[in-house]
Length: 220
Image (spheres, rainbow, N blue to C red):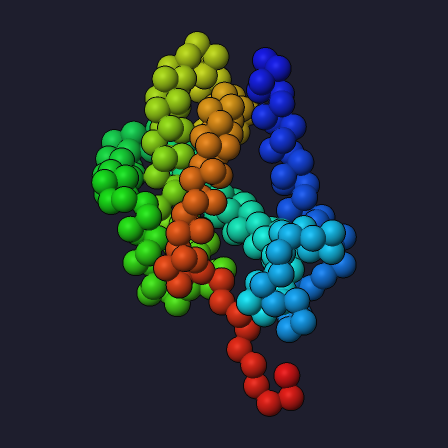
């Protein structure tokens, strides 16, 4: 790893750490208002200033980052296992199963992921759960196609053929030999997806389809 890559990784790690623990260390609340410091500029007390309600901008930024990161990780945790399972199944079984998975992934890939997210988030009513489902619905296809290709390349390897001839169950072959082989490429794709998903979450939130404040009622 080059010095530039190590520096970039260090900066990224610090940003993630700040998002995770920053709101816990901040002396300010992300929702509490203070009309005495409305639209205040950066200062020792408020490093990034305050908004039109006197809320600390840095604290709100850190809380928003933690929420977005949580949505992104849940999205990857939902779409990756689905795509992994479908890719393993399609690459191993072949035939109509392979054709069905491939055609379904073609449909998903052909439609812009952000457009799918906008439509599904609108139908599901927004919110964190809606964002996760909307983004995961368009994210599984990339994993499925990658895993399918890797399985097709490795299913005729001598070790796999020998295990099959010896009567090893397909599940054992997939779990012990093919799954570890595809783990590396899948994790690389997952890492690159995180950046795109952060932008997608921000875009959907800007369009009014993001996380919504909890409704209030009498007594709350």
